[in-house]
Image 1 (cartoon, one colour):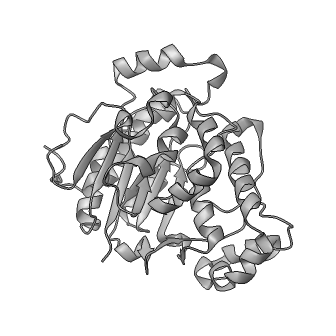
Image 2: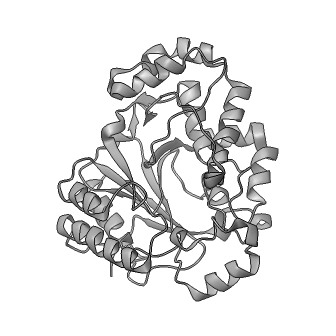
Length: 333
């Protein structure tokens, strides 16, 4: 079996030194990016490691990316763990950075990273047994190819990055040719009803966008290198931004590039599910989903809520994690 690494990025929003440094760079106009909910600690990172140990023991290496701070409970001597600081792989001219896009766009520079790797945000968790074939098959990243219209709203200005990403895809790929060449990968029954989106949107003259399920993403390091070699100036423009900007490119660009090239293996979108806490889902719904392990993976997006709602939601969700993953992993001291 080919080596498959996991990469996870993490920030300790409670770190006073980090808060002070961030405040020194924070422009008032980027209030959304600097909002509390993007950085607060849900005290559940340990369940990410427990999930990996219990449900994905086949993983080759875990690259834990941080600006420098570490959880007090983390066993940094675990043989599968590689602590990666921003300064270890992100070019010095972009540091310090508080832009998750910069952190993600440069992942291919991590020393020792395997060609095939899975990228996790710290709000994505494995909650049931997964196989390496859930992420890579026949050397190809597993993914879901579905056309999707991007609808911009000023209320979610950072969604504009999806337009930037698909612009690069349309620069290098002809949608009609892509759909014809990889017909069975685009019109695949594994996608269920979502395949109808592609049917409806296929008359478009260009890619209107691609459906992005907020789940751990399977990547080939060579994809990052290829896109960087072709669009270095554009990607550098993102890396220069200390905070996320609506004109940024994101890691989804590499995902879309793999799909457009046909270098992926079709996977059902039901492998995992994304929850938007309070915005469209309740903590009780998430608790039930985790407890019953309805799918293999889950993403829990945090949105604005009162301190009281936050504390209650954290208790409810973490109690479910503790029910299915009660024992400490070897990644914990």
